[in-house]
Image (cartoon, rainbow, N blue to C red):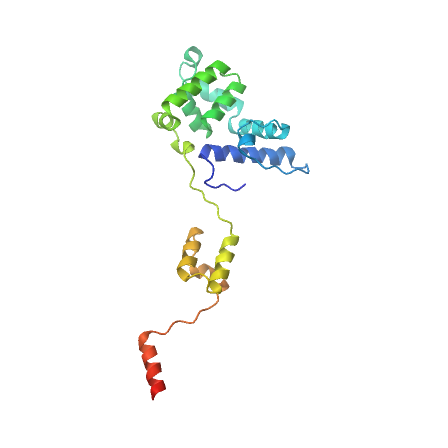
Length: 212
């Protein structure tokens, strides 16, 4: 699984990885390919295998026992007052999941019912997830795009080829290599040596010698 910054949130990327692990474990021996999109990842797909992968991801990220333990130890007055949106933010940060996934998992575990889920979702809309995470000292990065940018390694060969054929300057090659945290020296064995341009003094000497 390759992560890029095309996902809307870090928490989404974490869930996507867990979803793909579910496919690998549950459906590895089947001669089937899985192409996931917003429908499959968001749980709206009616395909049985996609639902199984989503359920696997939910169980992997928010195990029943761990959820129960966290609520008992960290959520004050839960049995009397239930959960607030700030409590959901604490759960988000503890299990590295999105607000929506936390609600869905808590509903599936019968920690909250559908009415409570709707109320919490409305409270989330009013207060914004980022503000909720910051208010509880949670991991606010879960609600922002990650900075992981994936570039196929073959792109290096493509740029080196163009450099060797004088299609791109050295500066362009250096910029591309910098994206991979590489330098010219790291790929020197793949580069064709270019003649060093003579400076003005050498050129004057050459011209002078020819005149003589």
